[in-house]
Amino acid sequence: MIKMKICCCINSLNPGGKERVMSELINGFIKYHKAEVHVVVYGTNDEIFYKIDENAIIYRPDFIFDDSKRFLYTLKTLRFLRRKVKKINPDVVLSFGEIWNSFVLLALLGTRIPVYISDRCQPNKSFGFFQDTLKKWLYPKAKGVIAQTQQSKVYYNQQYKHNNIVVIGNPFHPIDIPSELERENVVVSVGRLIDTKHYDQLIDIFAQINKTDWRLIIVGGDAIKQHNKAVLQEQIDRLGLRDNIKLVGTQKNVNDYLLKAKIFAFTSSSEGFPNAIGEAMEAGLPAVAYNCIAGPSDLIHDGENGFLIPLYDKKLFSEKLRLLMEDETLLFGMGKKAILSMEKYSVENIVNDYYNAISIK
Image: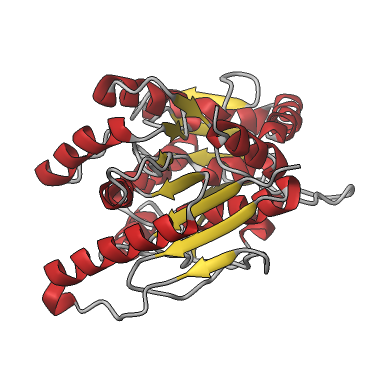
């Protein structure tokens, strides 16, 4: 059996969504396909947070990026990336990251090394005129594009006219659900307390339902300098719901909260691929979510394992949330279907999907 030589390029392996998925793929290519995996980490932070298989060969620049000479050191990084990948001479390169994919494609122009790229955020998000123009020029030069969602694929087809776009979601690990688990009357939501999560709307929706024997727990802390926790707590206090709505901040073991709850609620208006929904469904929770771009519609089959709500339709969101609160047969039936629907996103399945997608045809 001939081993495939794969070069994974990423700006960092710090804690983060794209970094977690890339780490899973690196390990999975080695575990399931015995591939020879090289990893080029070319960003300014060389910390490796995730456990990487000892058989993976990792490369980093031998210089420290000087931000005061940003243009010069960007060129040095491009040169390092080009030379290193050419020396590795892989069968294929896999790159993650919206701005970073353009960086990799630019570095490898003219090498004829096949490069597969995957953006990890909302597909129609603008990064400014320069970056958007660069993507329109460079992305069609990739061998293939891996979209996280069906909506992303539609957008990429329109923007880049690429003829090799496949949809592959993120991998999820199954959650061990105790057979005698006793769930509480809890609606849970997980995410950073940023404006696009619209937790103010979720708090209003929960308040309008007025189920005093239920609680809403929001797991997540302040981020990107928005300082929303104080604002949301003031809203909760103003509604007189301090005992029923809890902001518990960032938590290491989110699964404890998912296993305690009965319903997952998600009012985000912007996603790349909503990992929070997938993790909740792995825990057996039906999800009620705004049908934002992009991702909820790939995970939630409306009326089967949860409910998709048109963006900002708080009235319908409230109706569906109340329906689940009042109908335990429906609630637990949807929860079981949620677990079954996540089987396609197992780590092994996603690794195989990626391996098949990047295999040279």
